[in-house]
Image 1: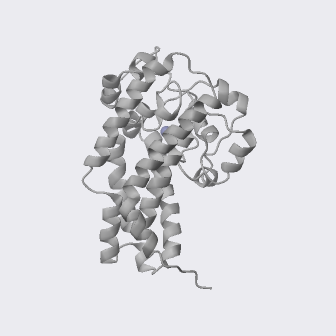
Image 2: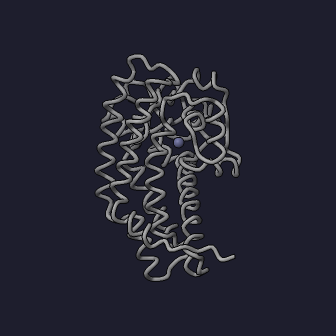
Image 3: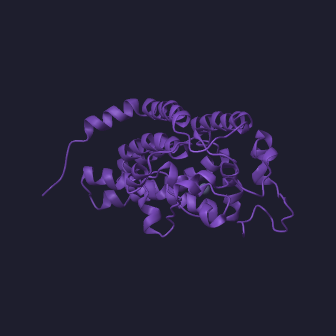
Length: 290
Ligand SMILES: [Zn+2]
């Protein structure tokens, strides 16, 4: 049976409103999950928030500007590839609806693979540890990224978009979903255990992503997914922890002291510095060996 549908109206709608929907998803979920963090808190933060939030907010604002300044978007590149018939999905003449689903799934895999590379390649880990050295985890951690992380991820994503001919519509829908899910997965909230496990069958949840922010390296090097949970299950990097362990576990990076983890200048220069703390003899910029 031929499964096809006219995607033109949806394409037209998201092209007109995609950016607004992405901001709405991000700021809407900030409000929603920010409220839920107060109602069903996973763990109490004490006074740490006063030191963390200005820094995390500063990085978020910087990154929103950096994203706006990036010279090429994945959607513009996908449009160019579509106009020229470039990429695997175009060569295979895949039906639009199937290409849309494939595009979203592949885009999710690209995100998983870039995140894996951020942990496994020492130069990229220097950049990504800005995200990981937060000693707590909540909605403010979502865009606590070094701006270089966005700059480096873009050309890799663009290359895959062109090589596989991912549909522009798939990319816009993915970005909207990603904006909301990123806030959801970092939220310091305790969903009912059964609901969290049920959602984990398809998407990444707060309980799943919290394991990734553990100070213990085998746990940090697990659950790389940002949207779909299937990639960690498929590639053997999926880890679960009991509810009480999730509440008690240490978060952050032991080799970066709190005064650095809560200083915007220190975080912006972190990738360029060799840091030695806690008597560690190894270069802390290298992947950790616990
Ligand atoms: Zn990570």
